[in-house]
Image (tube, rainbow, N blue to C red):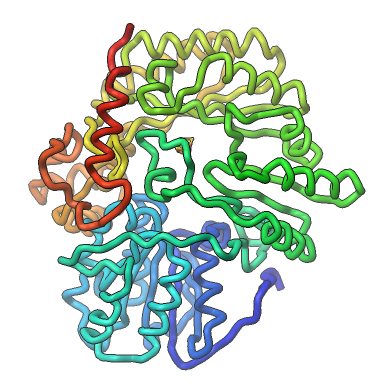
Length: 503
Ligand code: SF4
């Protein structure tokens, strides 16, 4: 048996399916998805099953409801693949009373549900863990479809086409952790624990922060209890959160783990990334004791000016200190993540990055550094949601320039694809027209060429989604009532504008 359930399963007559729009390996490592599956699986009256694109071992004729969790903009491919395999029509208008209810949630949906409203009967906007149980309790009643939707529409956080919705936000009462340990997970047998949700830093492009305001953290005692539970079944512990080091008792949690390791417990410890201005020797030593060899810091932008513009406010000296501390305290290597294409970025900013790389190299001989770059994508519900997406050719030129100069320094670099990131912008800021594009792209196989030809066939002018959006025009995702409101996003953008020109 390669799955260990850390809770008591329940069953019932209502056949509920939790679907993950990618392969099982990723489903099993997705904390939010797995936690919601656990909630359904524990509920009396529900017969819960989980499926993924590569594993659909259910009776397709007995599904009562099917829920998807979308974490990435391109997850729609997996949604259609699963619906096709189950012989369920993609468009909700083609699904009658006898068809299962299909709904979704997750970061993609919470950011902008509009491109998906043609497919899902309803969507959950915001934190899923409390509303999800209320949704299941309504579904279990097996009312006619319209009556079910009418009841659901009364719940805060449920979006039904044509209605305004309040984003739902929970006070983390219970610690979320990996409820099913599995050899088949991308993070094999790893017990992941959520320490905190959101991030106080409010970088102006960041949905992890803006979608999850206010920053919330879990109670220390509950975290420790969760760790103890996990350690009964595995020695692999990973701590999760966009800004875990901001947890007021982060050092105490790390000390708890460190004491255990120093007392001879075999614990493999993982933290996805380190906050650059919070890296300290004790933290790195604890990670190294826990078997971590490499880590990541995110500096987000090429120059100090751009980091101020996006509210990251990280100084060069802080970056150099973080790298040195990582090297001096036993890590073997470090990945440094940044973005290019932030509005107003010039060659001067890119050259500042290369100068920084030179300093990192000369001060950290023998330390394995890899740079990883993505390109800026304006995301809904952030202060930079109106910004222009930089042209693909100019981003490719910047990438080449960086790669050449980092190569000269003997430093490794990886780049995301500007073409894909450009389509990500179209999907993220999409409106109703994008629904048709998604279906067409799927039918054409989902490769990059499929997007271009689908847009051409459907006569969708993609440049409309890539240019600067006007602040006085309504946005597709205005259907979500979310804090902070638009006026505050505009104020924040205006506050940061003073950094938009080089001194
Ligand atoms: S520090 Fe990271 S997680 Fe926090 S707002 Fe900035 S980019 Fe987002």
